[in-house]
Each structure stands twice: as C-alpha cells, then as structure tokens.
Length: 219
Image (cartoon, rainbow, N blue to C red; front, side, top):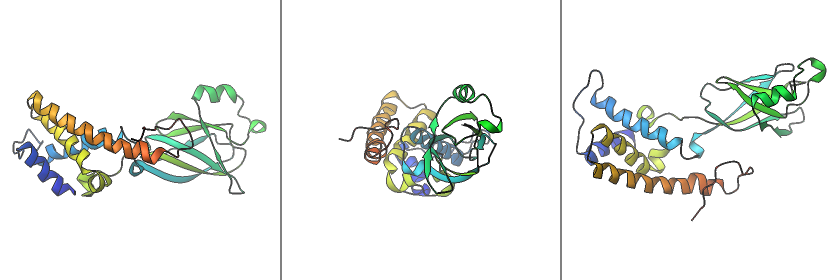
C-alpha cells in the first residue's frame, strides 16, 4: 500500500474526506499527521529491521569522544575494529561509571576502549581514551523516511494493516469519534501490532546474541 492508497483507505474507513481547514491545517496536513503519528508509535514499539541502520566511523588517538549520526535515536551495538580487522564490542555504561573508572585522561592511561556512554544528544564518551586510531561500527535505531514523503515504506509494503489502523486511531481521536469507534480501531490496531511484534521482536530476535535486546515469545 503506497501513500495514495493509504490516504484513500483512511478517508473511506473514516467516511470523512477531512475537507475543513483549520488555519493552515489542511486536509492533506491532517491525514499526513495521522500517518506520521502512527508511524512514530509503531517504530517505538517494535524493533524492525527497517528501523536499524549501520554506519562506520573513526576513533582518534587521545580523543575520548565519538560523534553520533544526526539521525541516531538509540544504540543497538557499538564496536571498534583494530588494525587486524578484529571486532571488539563495547559495553554500554553510564557517564559517571566511565569518569570514575578512568579519571586520569593523560596519555599514559590511554588504552583500547571497553565501554561507551551517551554523553549528550550528539556524542558518545569512551573509556578508556583510545590509545590509537580505530575504526568503529555502530548499529542504531532511527526513524526511516515517512511514507508521507517517500510514497512507499517497509510498513506500507509489508504490514499495511498496522499502519492503516494506527492512522485511523489518530483520525478517530481528531474527529472526537464515539468511544465505541475508538475502541474498535484500538482493538484492530492491537491485533495487527501483536502480529507485527511476532515478526519484529519474535522471529527476528530468536538468535539475538545479547539477552538484553527485546524478545517477544513466538506462538
């Protein structure tokens, strides 16, 4: 289901073309908002391959900070790669842990990083401070392009039911629909979401290396 088809489905199910304009909030703006809010809700509830991204970067000797990608939201894993092309996965810790464990950042105390922490919205801090230049590989969670702007998306192509009922739930709230209508859309959305979690957090996570990652029991 592409965005044109999704828009038509929302209007048809809701029996509303959303013709009224509130200020600059046009009919197109209204439906786009319903869809984007549904996408955000879905992406924050299920760990789909479509919301994972991989990038490589570089650590500089003597620099304990690593800049995050501009679209980074949270981390799945961070690894450093040495000159022999060997991977070492860093453990996620709190900034206080790294500061306390490696209080002296002078060059004699540099080493191979073992830990990382989220220092701020744009930066990781590493411990210990790198003793050489290393490559780094980051797997992280991000919001993919919305079907509103891209016309198609993984959800639209593979699981349009959860996207449709998620958008209808937002539309029903906007229209101040009867409780029965909202509850109906909520029930259908929950059914579709359970199926999606079976895939994203269940079948796709059965071979996860670290048990700390989300796993949903497969039925």
